[in-house]
Amino acid sequence: MKNRQRQRDTLFSVTVFLSAFAVNLLIQKLFTTQTLVPMIFVFGVFLISLKTHGYGYGIVSAIVSVFAVNFAFTYPYYAFDFFVEESILSAAIMLIVAVSTSALNIRIRDQELLRVREQEKLRAESEKERMRGNLLRAISHDLRTPLTSIYGSSSTLMIKYDALPKEQQLKLLGEIREDSEWLIRMVENLLSVTRIDDSKVEVVKMPTVLDELIDSVLMKFSKKHPNQKVITRIPDDFVDIPMDSILIEQVLLNLLENAVFHAKGMTELSLSVSLVENQAVFEVADNGCGIPEDALHKIFTGNYEKTAAPVDGTRSNMGIGLSVCAAIIKAHGSEIFAENRKSGGAVFRFALERGGDDDGQ
Image 1 (spheres, helix red, strand yellow):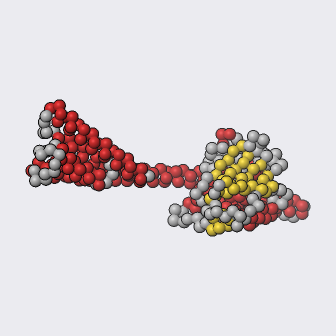
Image 2 (cartoon, helix red, strand yellow):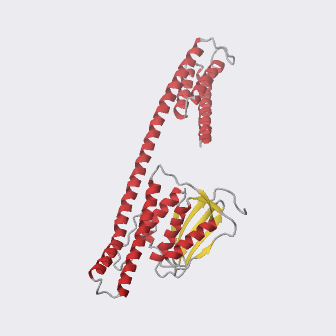
Image 3 (cartoon, one colour):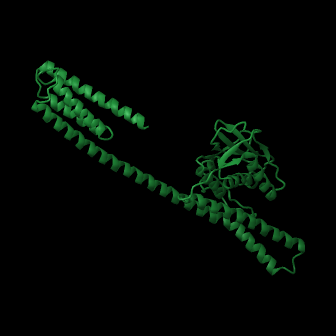
């Protein structure tokens, strides 16, 4: 970008100087007068100093203009004579104009740049506050159901402990455990958001072997959902990817569990990784009910809520879970996308830079 800026400034300076020179030649030919020559060159120096970046273009144009006036428009013509008082005065005036205009231009641009940065900072803070508000709303919405369920089940056990059969007691205890596990996952998500929301903390990327990452994800997922099969498709070659493996594991687990909880009618769940140029593209796909079209653009913002709270004890943490995924992937310098499949169901996709040419290693 700096090279393009230099090219534009150079082209503008040359164009203005040649235009001033041509105008002076035309005036000299038509009116046989020299009085306007210095003024036109001063105006050209002013334009160059005003429209270019830094002091250099204005000062150089002032020096070149002095040479042009002395050589082509001062007697003896087409010969240099720097002892002419007009040349010395023109040089001083043009240099003063160039330096003054460039200094003013730099100050104005610095103030404009500062203003733009302040606006960007305010927008970023506003967006951050909006995300926090959405996050708090999602948390309050999603925590209400499991906490109510835990409270109700534990209260029933305490009040009717002797009257309840053992099977009913075990069922209530199982529900308490399931809700507690869900709350633990919620806390893990919140801790991840807090970690990557801190501007002082950067994601530490370490080379991670893809096979080991997928095996770890599938092992943890199978412990929580032993009856749900996951179809995996990954490259046969050895692939390592720079990442924070713990956070990416959490993203993949969130996406897989999101399908289990929300993809009604799902009979097939898949996790695939493909290599596209210097990226590894991760996809989690299901053949369930898909995502409502009006929710596709906001499911990663933490602002996604169902029209009504569930009344059957199920949990609806799609908003918070996916907003965590989006934050983690953004911290890795990428984005996550969701779309409905033509054949039915939904697919979630994100890409990570491989950071090196490791094919075939």
